[in-house]
Amino acid sequence: MNILGYAAAAADTPLAPFRFDRREPRADDVVIDILHCGVCHSDLHQARNDWRNSRYPMVPGHEIIGRVASVGAEVTRFKPGDAVGVGCMVDSCRHCGACRRGLEQYCETGSTLTYNAVDKRDGLPMYGGYSQRIVAPEAFVLRIPDGLDMAGAAPLLCAGITTWSPLRHWQVGPGSKVAVIGLGGLGHMALKFANALGADVTLFTRSAGKEEDARRLGAHAVVLSGERAQMKAVAGRFDLIIDTVPYAHDLNPYLSTLALDGTLVLVGYLGALDPAVFSVPLVTGRRSVAGSAIGGIAETQAMLDFCGEHGITSDIEAIAMADIEAAYARMLRSDVKYRFVIDLATLRD
Image 1 (cartoon, helix red, strand yellow):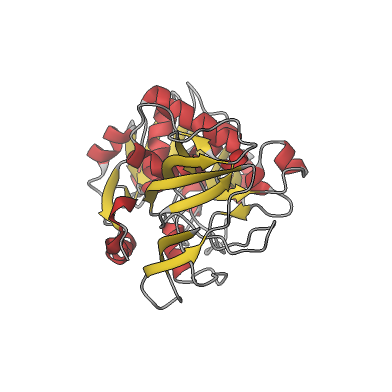
Image 2 (spheres, one colour):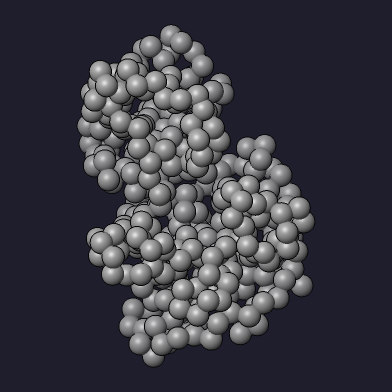
C-alpha cells in the first residue's frame, strides 16, 4: 500500500513529505490508521545520525496511536475501529530466553524496531509513525483503554514505558523513596508514575524555578543538585534514582544519596560515562548503577491499563506535521512541556 509520510533523506536535510510502500498485510497483521505520533528525542538523534547507525530515507516515530483499519484472518484480539498503539518495536524472535520471559526489548537476536530497521521476515525497510498508516503483527499491537486521551497517550509508548519498567523491576510501591533526575519528557512521566505507585518522590534538577511544576506532576520535594547543602541533606535517602538525562553528565554527586542497596538506573543516556563513576560509594553502600530499556509488550499493556485506571497521560503540545523541524529545534533547547505530539490529520504532500 502506498503511504504518505515525512522522512529524512540524509543527516543534513530537513524532514519532508515522502511516499513509500508498506508491505501488504499478513494473516497476523493489524493495519492502523495513525492519528497521533509522539516526538521522541531519539527521533532527532536518528534523523541526524547522531548514533552513526541511521538508514535513509528514514520515517521516524515510535509513539504511535491510531485506530484499526483492518485485520488479518488470524487476528483475534482487535477489530476495525479499536483504539490501539504501537511503540518502539514491532517484532522479535519470540522464542529466545528473553522473549519467553516477556522481555522482547532484550531479544537475544535483536527486536525489530519500528523504524530505522529491517523486517526480518521479508528484508524490507521499517518506516515509523510520521505517516498515515502502519502495519504491525497483532502480538506487538497495544490496546488503548477507553477514556484515555488519545494524543496524551502517545508518549506512553516510549517515554512512559521507559520510566515505568524500572519502577516495576525495582518493585517501587508505598514506602519506597524514589528520585528522578531531569524534568523532561521522561522525567515528568517518572514523577507521575512513582507518585501513583505510592512512593515518596523527589526531583533532582540543576534549574531553580521548577518546584511548582514538579509538585503538580507528583514530586513531594525538589533538590537543586548543584547546591551542596541540599545534596548533603538527602545523603543515603533513595532506594531508586531514575536518571532521565539524555546527554553525558556526572553521576558521582548522586551516588551518595542512594540508600544501602540503592540503585541509580540510566534510562536517558546512551554512551560513555564521563567522568568515570567513583566506586567508593558503590562498594561501601552496596549501591548499584544500572540501565533499563523500554519494556516488553505485556509490561507495556499493564502500564497502559494502569494509566487508564488512574487517568495518567503525558503533558503534551500538539503540532502539525509540517512543524517538525521547528519542534526539533525547540526540543534541543528543552522548550517543551513535556512532549510534542504530531496530529497526523495535518499531514500533507
